[in-house]
Image (cartoon, rainbow, N blue to C red; front, side, top):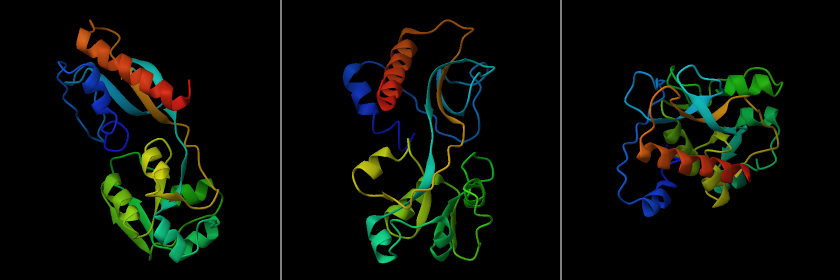
Length: 199
């Protein structure tokens, strides 16, 4: 919600100023059949038991840092093994599905990361802002961080990347009547997903 949805909400509100929205942000899964939600942006890959997937954004994960940090440490073209010399920022709350540094290093074929130079947060947004302020390197999710990467607050470090297989899915319930406001919001989200896909 913080990096992808909130920057886009003004365009929906400009189109439909009379539609009330309640945004629920949490890492714990919501169930469309039981919880107070009409539309979900869920990390994973369908099919989903509680709804139908309308659109999907695949993800790619790679290291990112502030331009200043990258310059100071000469790491813009860093290979995975040289990342061990940098401060690595982790976002892990034990319940979320964020990829950790050890998982990322394993997926790119470079074994385990040393733990002595880690800065750990329990919220991904805090980890990203720590990277933006020059405190180290965080794993960047391409779809989520498109804006800070595009405006230069963050730069990609090296060329190694992992495609986790999952991504961000737009899900609506398929076994109950759809309210008009829900349909408007779901259609707008689907168009936003397709725009990001270049469709």
